[in-house]
Length: 94
Image (tube, rainbow, N blue to C red; front, side):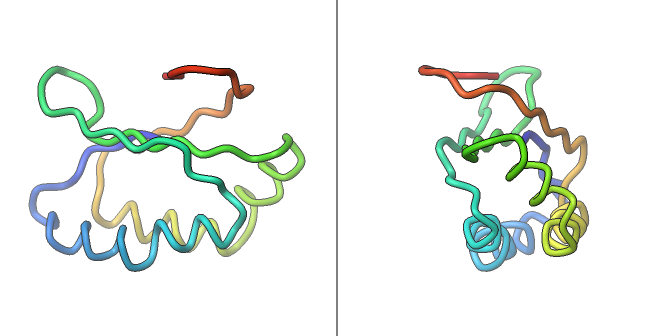
């Protein structure tokens, strides 16, 4: 998942991510593997990677009401949200 933080809501964003988003995605079954911040360059500001055991689990989670609620709240604080589902492999994936 990638996104840029809306500068108007930076403080609210950080509070939401720490208190709700990250704990929420973990409760849904995501195993968070990476979190990156771009400090220079023309790339998304935030990149978060998570691992799930199989495509069926991914589909179940991303079509759930709980995921929709978390994502909708995140979208209140960010722009240019994108998600990509790829088979897991060793090393950095983008």
